Image (cartoon, rainbow, N blue to C red):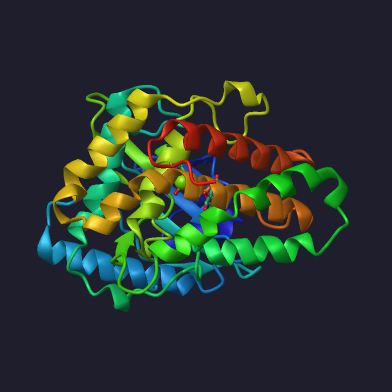
Length: 344
Ligand code: ADP
Ligand code: GN1
Ligand code: MG
């Protein structure tokens, strides 16, 4: 398929070595190596039902940033020969092209507190730089993406299909026991409680580019879910993915643990940029960020398993069940180790 798409961007397939890269669950990402390097990506149209919203949100952010802080490294796509941000293939999938940012690396797990600090400040910097933009001008690319109430409802709905319930029963019960987090989320996000800001919504460590030589950060990528949300989402997803030494794929639950030095460093990094503008309610909500996002992922993975694995790529049948049990263990570990997070 890349052969038919590249000419639309004015590139000749024979000029490149094309390699599939990335460990994301959603898109297909290719690195093109030639005289100049590029990233070519097929957007998952089943997840992003209106892909043009991604392009319009990013255009708005990019225009704003080039006016207000021209030195900020905001990744923008390369337009096609006919001037479009995305080109569609015969199956209706949109594709886009990015410059490959040279001398950078991405990592799949956090091993030092410096990485946690720098990554968190980089994600916070993006939200801080967009402070002042018209938040209402953005359209959600996935409606209510990190709305815990909605994720709970989707989970309940998935539970009404009992084809796979016997294998999932224990985890379903564990998810139900954590329900008080949904009520806390509702309270925290009631009108007037926390400001909507432009947040990244996928703050995994492999969405940060690190300078290959200095180890400092060179910016963030994977901006499809850049849209209005609460800082709880970005902070929480970092806690979820940075703090334990093992990822959401780990089957040996005893390896899941709380690395306090990483937790402290990521908070310090986030606050170094966002601290001065955060409200009192946002500050009070910090301990709940990690548990809430971890709970959302437990609900999403388990709901996907119950629905027959229709959303996340899987490489073995019970993978979503493993991911859900991993996230439930992590939820327990976070609740026990973060002061103010023991809520049920
Ligand atoms: P996914 O949705 O699959 O996570 P990403 O946009 O995060 O897709 O890209 C996957 C990987 O490709 C990244 O983790 C990073 O290693 C690499 N990558 C993506 N965009 C760039 C870029 N512009 N420059 C350098 N590397 C990139
Ligand atoms: C998906 O594309 P990727 O792997 O970065 C998902 C995130 C989840 C993550 C769990 C659009 O992100 O919300 O946190 O998997 N993205 C979407 O690994 O659903
Ligand atoms: Mg990514």
